[in-house]
Amino acid sequence: MQITHFNHRGVYVKDGCHVIGTTWFRIVAWESDTIKNLDQLQKGAAVHVIGRVRMQRYAAADGTERSVFEVIASEVELMEN
Image (cartoon, rainbow, N blue to C red; front, top):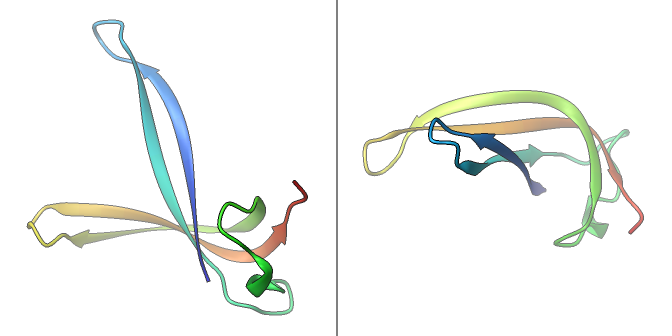
């Protein structure tokens, strides 16, 4: 199951302008004793994820180096809306 999460962060740059940056995290989860009912998740569902962060670097098709942040889930809980 692939889940994606984003985090917005506002910063002020040299000229005083406020800029919003976004960091995307891919959540990697496999059904197990601590992670159940992944098939019940729907797009836009709120989840609570516990796991470890891993960063991977790769070369994109255009030759630029990119980084991807993943959370390898050890627990996933569907939150009530």
